[in-house]
Length: 115
Image 1 (tube, rainbow, N blue to C red):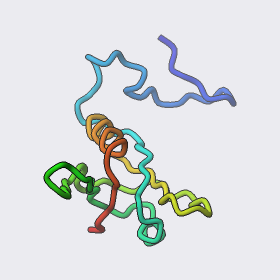
Image 2 (cartoon, helix red, strand yellow):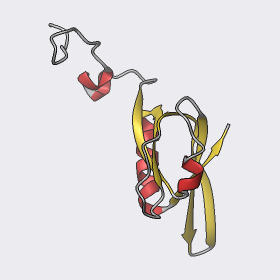
Image 3 (cartoon, helix red, strand yellow):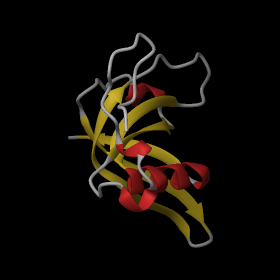
Image 4 (cartoon, rainbow, N blue to C red):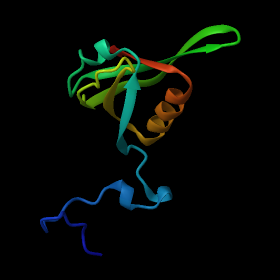
């Protein structure tokens, strides 16, 4: 098959996203946009930094925190909006970790620690 081509007609590398799920490489990483609760912490981050992502939530038995991602590489730090709703950061993580991050963000506040 012919390789994928960019809009200008130049060849581009075919990534794992072109393969059926069962044929993807185990070590494939994806970009995962993650909303961190404390926008001021996100302002400390730069592309290339490594972070751990912690999910903190309330449960019947009290507050709980767990590490959702370890050593995730920061790939992008978009400008935060002016509101107090945290800030977005894009992390390069394995595909299964991206799913964990998405699930955790639906039920908990996310924070990061820098390496």
